[in-house]
Image (tube, rainbow, N blue to C red; front, top):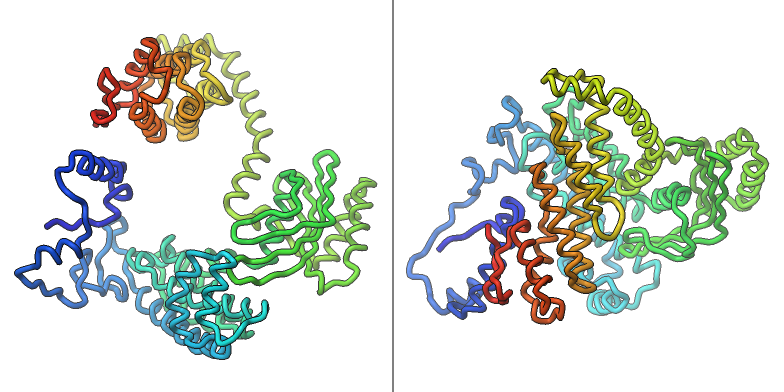
Length: 557
């Protein structure tokens, strides 16, 4: 009997899940065996020997479970000399927090839930189905009586607090060498969320003492010193509140136009009203009112916002709860009027007064939106870089080619523009839609091969793989055509001269699926289509028999 870690299939070993899927599918088709679960197997074939598990042992550490709670000394070997003296203090800190949250949880829900800890254990059922029907069924079985919307919000928030109290013990957070590693930061963020909910539910601020205790957990990195420094740098600013969700939308609304008045932001439902947006040169202004509601806790808030983009990454403004500032709409109207009159200094002053110099910079956006906005802001910069680099490339082309022919090294100051333009021109061939321009591709590849550079940029490889995948999706979803297949074959033939390491797993999977269903595609009656499809198999490293039979198709690797 051989037991393997589930992470073997696709995590530790790339494409491992595909190999497993192939094996299971082959077993099913050949009927040579039957797939079952281990429990059934043991019932049919009872064990004759008893194995006794050594208590507190683990597969990854000779010290057993000490790797998850002490400075055992075992490590990955990547950082010789690093220790794990932070583990014990961190575990003690989390144990303290867990105990505080347990008593607080019982106090909050005892008047609402019949069996608080049974409800906590069953909370996974609600996580799987958060529909109104799922919530109603859960509360019907767990609540002492019918709850009001406010009471539901308290119960769901308390359950979520307990969920994060469990998550902060996630195994990988203890496994590695450094308290500032991404895994340990994640469990600290779980703890932060639990404390945030505790403060909201019971006005009990556990964070100050929690952070004091973290100072006993040493970091291996001098600039961080201890756990509290890690918390300050990586955790405190990651806490998500309804105000931050509103701030995220406020800033992103400057850059994205949408006519929808109701929409979703992750697990939040948002209703927008009184929204305006203006643009004057490089300046942008937006304001409005948002009603936000969490799908998870049912917590909700109505806020007003105003933001002013001054260009680059400079954004000022903020959000204000409607119930905190009666008549706030008059202030927003005044700011808008100043903006429309091109009196930007006056608008800035009023925003500072309105929000107490509260700042919503691009850094307040959630990560994905940060990247999207920054890419947009950098577009003009990239265009300027390309113009300047192309001028250097074109004006010095002859002497650079002469240096290349004489096998002289190209100076670094000139090598950077050459390499940038080569990558830009090759990448541009794969941008857009439709078939790939083989003529333009041949020219770009031929030019690349004249120079001592390798096309290795991740953005370039992604662009090529993504375009090939898009063509394969069109081929699958619309109709197989000889023109599309031949275009891909020609693309691969031209690219062969560059020896690119492309990620083609999506395109391979689509090719495999189309091959298996070849008999339902009328186009495969054409010998031209079959010939092009067979030629493409070599480039995708997929073996397909001449008849395109479904049972015999397999990866050539």
